[in-house]
Image (cartoon, rainbow, N blue to C red; front, side, top):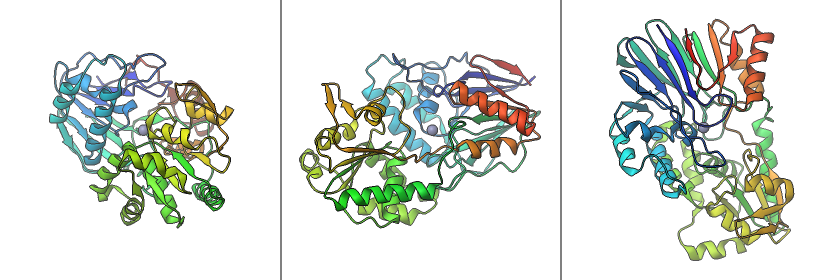
Length: 420
Ligand SMILES: [Zn+2]
């Protein structure tokens, strides 16, 4: 008997964890953390027989619970080579900065990394017991994968986080060669239509150039993994001529990227862009650098701490300057508050922001059109389950696929265990 057990990551973004079980073996797809208003929370797993774990990509909402599996027990954990390095960096940082009790520490993390098995895209891996997994490029961040699982009876396809649109750094997702029976489809932006990438890039570059020409500085708060480096690639590609700086954990992620050329669409562009940028090296540099007209790319992407928050305090009082947000801002974050109210709460108090504030939708997820195209391409699937999105997004995607494309799609619920 084959089952799929939705342990987390349904009707929400966070704690992604999906377990495929048959009589012989179990494959766990991701095991992430959820960052709620209070303490971080994790999916619950009663350890099944012959467990193997496959990690789609490094982001903590997919990987942040993995060390928990090593508190009492072990299992092989499959991931791509660059994911192994990125997830180590993110987990270390997660443990270091956590203000809450975490049910694991460095010790469990080290045990986890002893069991990591590196996989390449498109090369099937036999797990034994008649089960095979194959990682396919998902185009979301470097090393991200959609995962195919073939058991004796079913062929599964889990999109992980997926982007079918090409960016400066990455190719769009590869689609599976064999049509799947059961699909787990992410739904993050099922309600959002992204503007064409080229148009967003053009608008961004124009806004940066205008600010620089009028003598202002530009702060780009960006996620450390992928978005920061993508922004540097865009500036390089469009030949924006001004000093560009990189700070925070984006530097460590960039060093990892440079060690893995095979994961990039245009590695020379990436290498050139990273070489051209000035990497912040000292506290003294941090104190003075924004006095000149320049672009600073620094995490955190939603201004929850990181060096970006520090730079914002330096530039917020001058209308010549600009803050360019380059990703979705979750309600309740300092970034969202800045965007809507032109204020910045850095914990010490509320500051009025006179600098201009812009938002550019550089998404690393498929938008509505792309998700519908992807979902409707699986017309032979026995089941499509929408996961990884807010409730309305998961429902819209499942309903539209069912009613307009005749696909057997439904919304998965956390805790649900379905016999296939
Ligand atoms: Zn992700």
